[in-house]
Length: 78
Image (cartoon, rainbow, N blue to C red; front, side, top):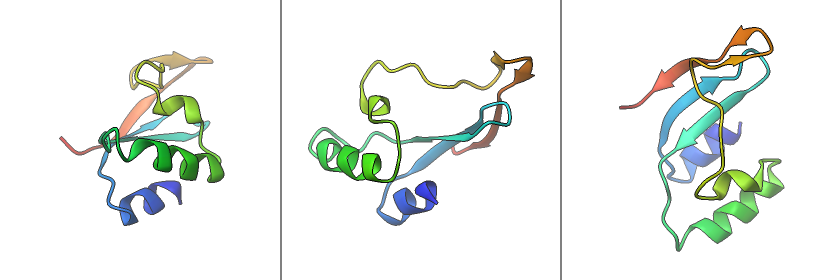
């Protein structure tokens, strides 16, 4: 539902990573510095990790092993 909210508000979904069955992580196109503070506030209210709005935050990657399972790329908008 967070992905749908982001898309409905004009944010472009670029990829979705399945984190070895635990959750889905969406990668969105950077919204720009002017938009980021307000977006970050809204995402926190939706239960998202505010650290992911930083420039150097590690994130889940397809092809990496996690607890004996593989993370997978399930959507890509190249």
